[in-house]
Image 1 (cartoon, rainbow, N blue to C red):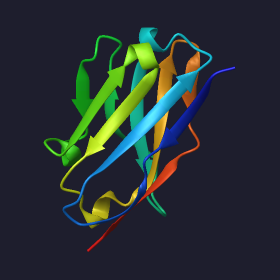
Image 2 (image 1 turned 90 degrees about the vertical axis):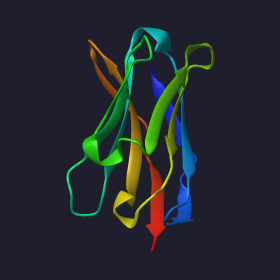
Image 3 (image 1 turned 90 degrees about the horizontal axis):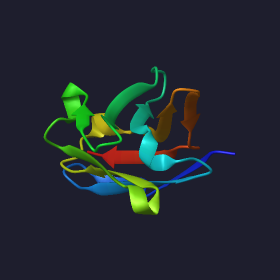
Image 4 (image 1 turned 45 degrees about the vertical axis):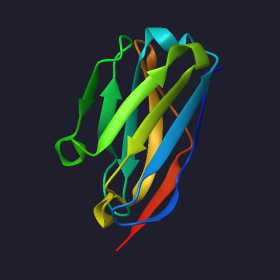
Amino acid sequence: QVQLVESGGGLVQAGGSLRLSCVVSGSIFSAHRMGWYRQAPGKKRELVAVITSGSLPNYEDSVKGRFTISRENAKKTGYLQMNSLKPEDTAVYYCALLTAGGTYWGQGTQVTVSS
């Protein structure tokens, strides 16, 4: 059974930073892409960043230069470092393991950025 557990969300002022973590169990983490998504109230879930099994990242335009996605395969953990946060970054953030057999989701962690 594949499980993803996020942590690191919280309340931060605009301009601040947060680091999200996602621990994966029950799967060969190193073989799959991992992504971070977010969903703001009343909006669709959107992809924020994705990282390949070889640690090549890709970012949604609005977070380029502010967010950094990374992974530690030995720890089966992925990260999203978020700097220069803006109120529009407020959302529930989800990590996802992207496999050929489907996508596995974490439970989500709330990020709130105050102005």
